[in-house]
Length: 116
Image (cartoon, rainbow, N blue to C red; front, side):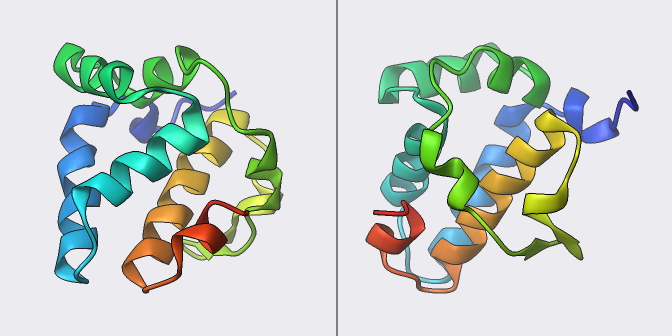
């Protein structure tokens, strides 16, 4: 299995970029947190702890309490790659999160982003 550079990237380093992207489009940090918690099963305290500990993406997803069963409904293209066709499970989880943040920044309703 290829070890991509993103796997060792600190989640805490990318998290502010997710928030920034959302806020540029008049969305909120709370919505970003809601998406991350929905996808990973972290509660707010758990998410904040992951950020404080400076864990990389690999650890962040490995320690996720419960990856949401509806995540398989996430479809589309991120960075020119269809998320549903990504074979590496960790890379797919990272791209799922990227896709959800993209949808938030594009103004999609939270109910649709959270596949409800």
